[in-house]
View 1 (cartoon, rainbow, N blue to C red):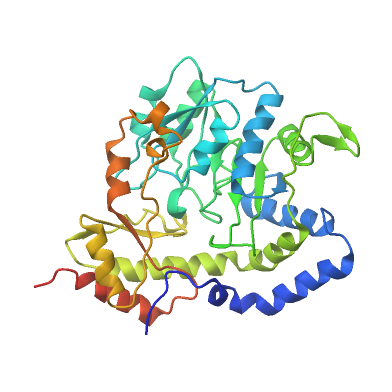
View 2 (cartoon, rainbow, N blue to C red):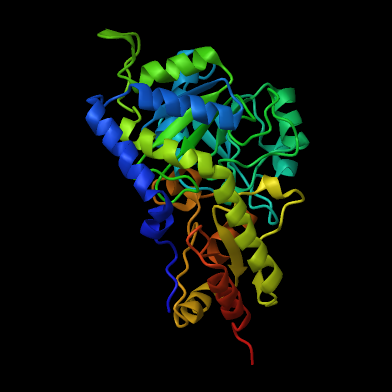
Amino acid sequence: MGCPFLDLAEVNAPYIGEIKRATARVIDSGRYVGGPEVEAFESELAAITDVPHVVGVSNGLDALRLILRAYMELGRLKAGDEVIVPANTYIASVLAVTDNGLKPVFVDVSASTFNLDAALLEGAITTRTRAIMPVHLYGRVCWGDALSDFARRHGLLVVEDNAQAIGAEASAGGLFGSRMAGGLGHAAGFSFYPTKNIGALGDAGAVATHDRLLAETVRALANYGCDRRYHNVYAGLNCRLDPLQAAVLRVKLPYLGEVNSRRRELAGIYDSLIVNPLVIKPEMPPAAQEHVWHQYVLRVDDRDAFRSHLASRGIATDINYPENPMRQPCYAPAYGGVEAPVADALASEVVSLPLNTALATDMARRIAEAVNSWRVV
């Protein structure tokens, strides 16, 4: 019996009846753009994230793009300003910066958390630094007193990339009191791509913020720049959240705690059973709520051979991510010289094991056994 890395049909199976009823409700309503489903979803996500304002948008990249664009329209950012980003992240974090004519400043990450290394932040500050984008990579919160103090001292905007950590909770308080990932800084982008802990049946995203004016600006920009019908205050975009996807997400949001608890349970099984000294396990956080385990990522020297070993036992794996953004062809000419030894090491060593709510406990144990049999003589 094989183990796929992720079977979305199996993940969605427990909710499929509710999803079908929810989508039928939208179809029968005759309201196919905006409307009450989107508004209800925004309110429900705001409650979970402990923020006053949420705007549903088309996807996670657009969420980040719109936040930065809105800050430019409001005069908080201008072309050429610098935004600190982690060297180890999905490329969307950086695309949002460069799409707005801003400059990414890559900072290396911690070998233990895989997130921004707060000890390196002071060395990244220049006279043009205006914002920082902590990425809660793999579901682990990138937040603490050091990062919070750094942002406050330098007067930086904090834009969270919360594509992977919905429901995670920081031990340190955020800038406005919320401890929830997505509510820690000034604004945050969410992704509900189907593979996320809470996934849509297509692309979907959201912006969360403590700033009413920013939310209004994002909402206008996402709707062709309109503040009312046929009145375009900005040269905007079409980045609206589909009510069908909003309805699907409304079905799943009430199960967020259950989903994240199960993912923590599976990560705990891996952590307790994997004992092979040839692999490095991800660090367990001091407090369980700081991690929602969007991915369970090992480090292995001979990655290709390790993946082949697991594949021979019917276990599929993945790599998140094999190339850092500044090494990608689109960014290498400008940023290829950035030194980020930890991020580069991770790119060459990381392997993600299956971890999702459709994964049975017995299968997780089998996977751990297969990892432990790697190069055992």
